[in-house]
Image 1 (tube, helix red, strand yellow):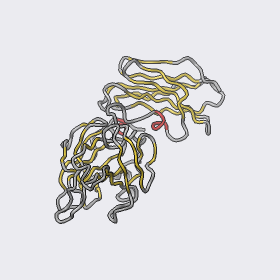
Image 2: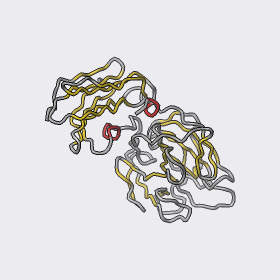
Image 3: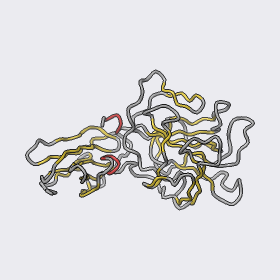
Image 4: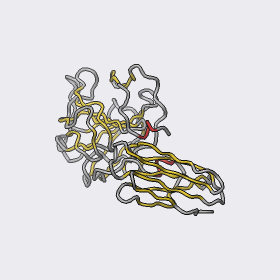
Length: 299
């Protein structure tokens, strides 16, 4: 994985045409990186019902959220960032589409979230936001003449293909949304790194060891039983979202150490190596805090 996907660099300039994103003067984006640890886009403890089937305007995986017993019960309720990132759109779409007041957040690694029909937009384009930070309020804004009841229209998209194929299923607190509708309680308490070690290493990997790097982050060792591969990754806990010196390494006994090291915003790695019935040494660093294991996990 390149440093670009891990540094949450500013996204390529994009133009919203209808409801499609077209990259202006850029080659097609690379495949999306690990999915951020998205949370429900509302303050922790609140319970909301999401629906993806009751609007003819919906495409697969888009969700409308409401709570309360009347059509306008949630008008003005806080909308929170589902994960940390950078606001790339904060504007009223006017006659362009039916989104009304729209906020789009780029989370790095090719992942973006969309928050539409807002009554109030609380962040400007270019703003770095933390998970759980208020970005707007539930509203009923749309194109002129399009009367809708208050709700939050929420989407997850990637930049690796064109609209609408880039609309992805929504995950909250690590679980896939129960399409077509589900009632959920938010765990979006804010702060923290939007990436997990399992998401960075990929499907099939489970954490088998970890070591805290003071308050700066945690080094992890993961294992995939299906292919006997180990994976080392370091997840930052300090200066999250800001590029700083971070590393992860993995050394299979009898082979050279392999290290991913650089100035990264969220994590270093993944470093994957096959080691069936062979001991490994692993570790990582964030800033001046570092860890090197002995040779271990020899099974």
